[in-house]
Length: 568
Image 1: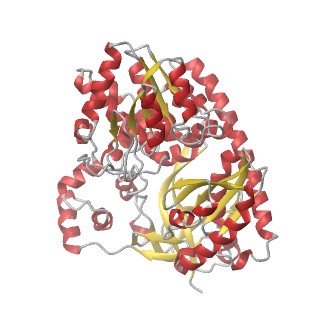
Image 2: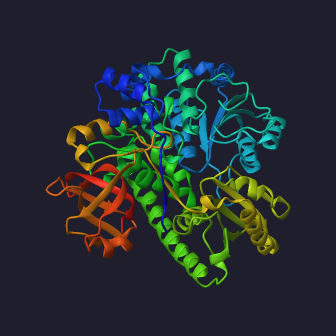
Image 3: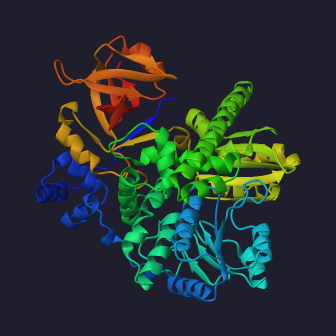
């Protein structure tokens, strides 16, 4: 599928000149900084040298003082505290952080992760009943709870207090909890609104440490868990998230949590870890436990105090991930086959597929796989507890949540946001939903949104890519939403004659832009279809990022090609 190439707006030349001179940096990289709002010496200093002192005072967050007072009361009265979190990476790292911190100074607490299949997302009535039957007086809910109005009302009747630590958007009303920590509350003055759930858990323990003269070093110990959360939950890597990701990735390399260290035993050695290492290796393994078996396995891994025990649990988590990959591959292949047999598919603007035997834990991943191939709003459904339940994913520029909301008359429940959602319906409504969703998408989607876009930062000649250039570029990291790895575009390049297809349709080649000029190793994932033109020596334009490739203990500079456009 040919992608749309769009150049970002050129930065203000005067600002680039001024900043380039102030920080002694070439104008190409300075221009990218200015594009990203880093347009003064002080902003550049903060960007390149994140400091823990850049973190905001946690007590600015609405509800924090009350939350700490309620925890103090629980500890003083020896009340049972339950640390509660969702079953994904953000939820389990949140629980591991808060539980580990307080378990070092208090024994009367436990943790709880809801079952994906029997309880579903967020706070459940089952969990509240369990807490009541086991004598818990306080529940600290992490990465969930901001819309659990009926659940909190139920808990209040059972004399169970809630402290809600959530980062999802609140509704018009919020639960009647003892305290709510959520910067997205309309009247919360906290200056940074985009913390992950684990990030808010980090702020809670930071506040407790500040109010009890506990050295910040003890809070820093959880930066690696916060970094895993920031990377996996795709929150913007700006402001506090940049600080936590920066220091957390360093800790991941130098002195990781026992559980994360155990997971990394099977990973190729790195001089340093990146967000991609978390997103493609650590995150899927932590997530797999909740998808395939029990998310408590991931928490047990991350709170383990003994390395031998952590290694044992890591083996189990890796086993869950291998199962997840098998389910993922089989269901994706089945979904592709269903599409190939559907003669009407080509004319559709949306993809909706249902099969009653697909594994519920991986259908969200399958939806993402279909987006990669066909690039249209996608809903994947399976049968669970007598209902059709599913995951939906969108394309840039289309409000998926609004489209699903328009189908609410056919749904039992739904939730999510613009780009991703979950939904449940009666089995007899699947066909009606498929037809209505297709109609809504067709009537509302812009044709441009059905073509994937590559937005590149700047056009460059390849000759400016030097070791010095890359050494500065590396300092733009950590990369992620809000601070993506810069995408460059270069025109009229060609392969020097060693292009080949590797793995599953990946293109490996060496390119240059000038006769006798420098040759760059390059990889284009999923771009094998261009091989036959490239080996004919036809020149092309290329969009790419620059990265280090680790292979057999060697590190090489490599272009990661995002797309190619032939000039003839």
